[in-house]
Length: 314
Ligand code: NCD
Image (cartoon, rainbow, N blue to C red; front, side, top):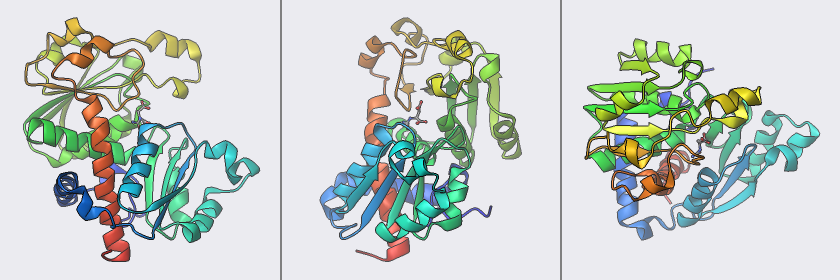
């Protein structure tokens, strides 16, 4: 499949080059400083949100973003059960129809390659809001924006990514984006069966991103600028005993946060289960709720970019 321009559709994070990221983040800053200037940006436009998998933050922050830009939302959550997919309709046919009802389509799907089917037929800007284990590009945009804003830089960073690296789509999307910056080192911390995929490993090697893989948690924390904790992805395990074995493999507690540098930050795409204890929430280094809030601003900026490039200025 030919990769579309990120000004047309957002399907995976590898599409986004450095200049796209820089301009998206400066537009995000502009919007958050002065949201009222953008309140008519999507006037008269409709966004369809079609979620075949559970979501709280991604769907609601997208819907809030559309409404704050003056647009309207049509939505079906649990699309697998409540949309015509339950009757056997293909993603292609759903996209063809929705392209007449909405100016933007935002879809989350349990299949890794669902967005490829969508691109075969969609006639309006399309945003992948999470596809199987594969990709979650808008999450990686808000993750990177949070790093940029909270550390004040994107270069010279040691990022420690922890947890279910095999099944977590946010991990994959974020690691790919980090290739655009200098002097990045990623330490991937996971139990051996949940290590990063060969595809991601090859991608990082090909793009000269320095990384190490380990099962040790404590040592990397001591030298981290960013600790990116993730959930063991229960729904992706065929064997529930496998999930039970790995659940709780790495937990950030108050005690273990003591090992982290004072000026480091703790991130998590959320939802959290038990991998960060609630008493860490008061730690000044915790950023996961700020990160979730940033999601709305970044999604407002993204919708503004897609709107201007595909429909001209409001
Ligand atoms: C993530 C996802 O859906 O991949 N959640 C989110 O969108 N913030 C992470 C997860 O579910 O663990």
